[in-house]
Structures are given as C-alpha cells and as structure tokens.
Length: 146
Image (cartoon, rainbow, N blue to C red):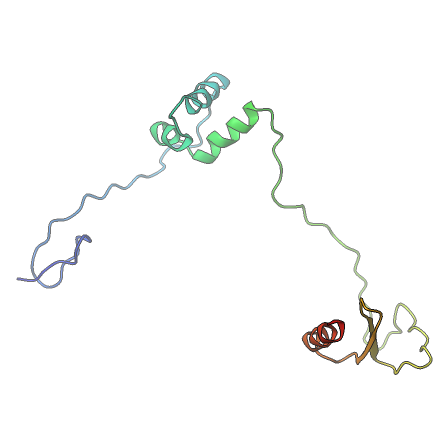
C-alpha cells in the first residue's frame, strides 16, 4: 500500500489518504455599501480592549485596510496619495546632425579636454579623464584624503 505525502492530502500510487477539507470562498456579491452608523459601530468595535482590527474584519467579512481607513478618518487624518502623479515634461526631437542646443563651453587653459577635476576635502585636486570609471575615482579620492 502506498503512503501519502504528510499533511498534503496527496497520495503516491493507488493507496488512499484521508483528504483535508478545502473551503473555497468566492465574491459573488457586488461592492458593499456601509452607512455612517455601520462604520462607526465597526470602528468602535476595533477600539475595545483586547480587540484587533484583523479579528473584527474577519468576523464581519470586510478587508482590514478598509477598517484602517475608517479608523484614520475617525481620527481626522487626511488621506495621502502614495504615488505622485506623473508629470509631462517638454521634449524636443532634433535631427542627429542638428547643432547642439547649448554651445560647448570654452576650453580652460591648462586642463586637457575631456578631463574632470575633483577638489578633495583636504584641498588637493584630482584630475582624471572623463572616461575614468567612477569607482576608480572614488577609490583614488579616498586614498588621497587619508
């Protein structure tokens, strides 16, 4: 006789295993509407000593986040949006051969074109090529500031 997988109700082979009870809950009803009195009653129920929002929500079949929202409203808290609304920014599409929007800055005498100057906290100056890896520059800066 085949043995079942412990606690799963599944079986291997032709043997039989006691099945577990499975309950499927569907949301056949539409959105429920709660009157102001019902909301006050449910919020008051969550405020009783030893009571939790989760227990009240399960007992009445409502979402815990809804009860939390009602509790915040009862305290007079203003709801906040989690996400900032997207903003549209102006974009200008130019041909690849079009002149740049801003003129290139004039070269500074004594500095090679395409280089970057980093002034360290101790007053030293670090000059690196613009193509130098940022992590390498950070390591150099840390070594020179030590």
